[in-house]
Length: 184
Picture (cartoon, rainbow, N blue to C red):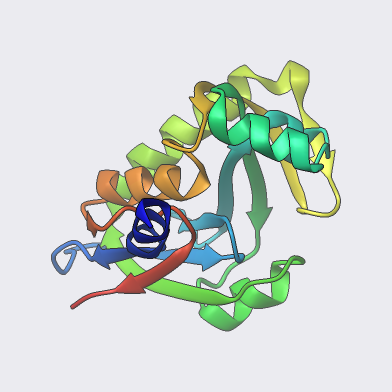
């Protein structure tokens, strides 16, 4: 019973977007089913997709039951996934360039300076770990090690939630799965 309550209450993260930005940049949250990723528009109108997950599962492709079980219940090495996309920052354009399933997309606007700051932080992690970069065709992302361990308490959806908080959004609920909604 407790697990059912945890899962049902944790299946959704509600995003309260930041106040209307003076200098808006597009932000897209992609729901891939069980995990999510974030697409940010840069100052040139180009886009970058970021994802976070367990290194063995995402970067090495070890997707069996035991690998997934271990990743959830024992903090493990995490991966940062990244892919450059062409602009413009429209929903249709993003969907055309994403080669994996997208169940739902939430779009919002954030202040350009905070988007730049988050993108700089994520790109710095990516650049500092180039030595271990791996491309995975099935996710269409290049992965590098991420310094924060992966676990049930901090998975791809919590990472996206933290990134959205950095962009000025408020997150309500505990996004165990990637069922994101926007609340106005």
